[in-house]
Every structure is written in structure tokens, then in C-alpha cells.
Amino acid sequence: MAFTDPMQAILDELDEDLAQDDLADFAPMPTPASANAASAALRRVEASAAAAAEKRSEADRKRDERAARREARLPDTRAVDVALGQALAEILRGADAAALIAKSGTVREMKVAVEPILAFALQTLVDKGTPKRDAARVLQKRLFPSRTA
Image (cartoon, rainbow, N blue to C red; front, side, top):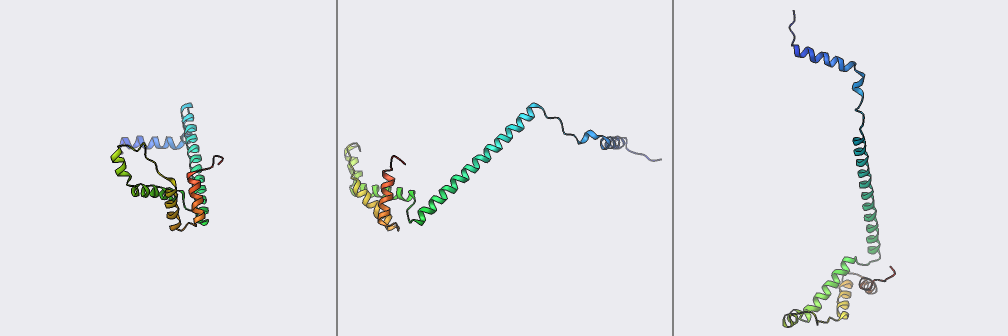
């Protein structure tokens, strides 16, 4: 006579019933809420994929633009901005603008000539390897962009 655990006998019987039950292979029927959630999730994934593709496209465009500028030996726009900022700072230091501002207490009446700033920025770009004509062109384009572009 064999003694078996009554709980184990019940579990074995349930396992046999599940194995014979064809309904065990069916997924639960979708409800309107789960269908809406699934379609919303799909829309989010599609939107995310579209945004990622747009970012990649923009990055590719910028990469191509920078490569073309390097090939043409034109400085990056950030380098032009840095040259202009350095030029302005140098001209203001040379004119002792800090003392003038401290004396008058304002910058309201202060005038700064553009020519020395442009000359300093032009020389900075030329010193970094940009041909003089190209440096003048990119400075002009950066400071005075055409209205039609």
C-alpha cells in the first residue's frame, strides 16, 4: 500500500486537466481599453522612430555641411563667433572701457568703432589658416546675413 500526499494528488490531477484543455492555448480576448492602449503605444513608438529619423537626418545634413566647410577651408560659424567676441573684448580692453564705464556709471553713451573689431577678427581667422578673402566673406555673412536667405 502506497501513501501519497493528498495535495500532490490534487495538483497532478489539475495538471492533467490543463494538458487536455484546448483553451489553455488561447490568449484572453482583447478589451477596448487594451486595444486602445496597444494602438496608443504603437503610435508613440512610430512617433519616436520618426523623431529619431529626423534627428539622424539633421545630424547627417550638419555633418555634410561641416565637411564641405572644412574642404573649402572655411571656418566653422562657432569659430567666427569666437573671433568676433575676442576682437570685441580686445578693443574694449584697449580702450580701457572698464574705467570709462566706472567713471560714467553707464554704457549708454559708449560708442565702439566696428572697423577695428572686424580687422582683429579677420586677422584671428587668417592666423588660424583661413584665406583672407574667405575670412572677410564669412565675417560679412555672419554679421550681415542676406535677407533673402
